Image 1 (tube, rainbow, N blue to C red):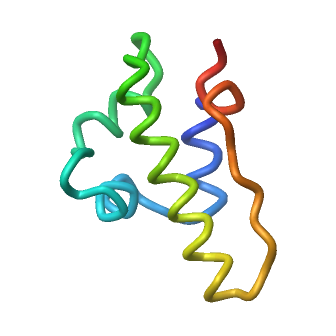
Image 2 (cartoon, rainbow, N blue to C red):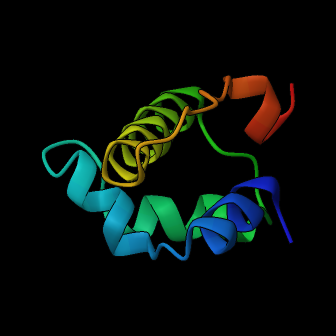
Length: 79
């Protein structure tokens, strides 16, 4: 299980939830490949997924009135 997969499981979020955050730039195929973690993910895709994850976290925090931890690329994808 990749770090991205762990985060999405803890949020009870699907790939579609991430794609909804950045519909113009991100697609389901990109998210699925990153979530499986079998091959290296291009940095551009990492940045898009990172933006979507952080946006999803902010949205959930507003609805639950909590503080949010914003992730950095290294925390999710490593170096």
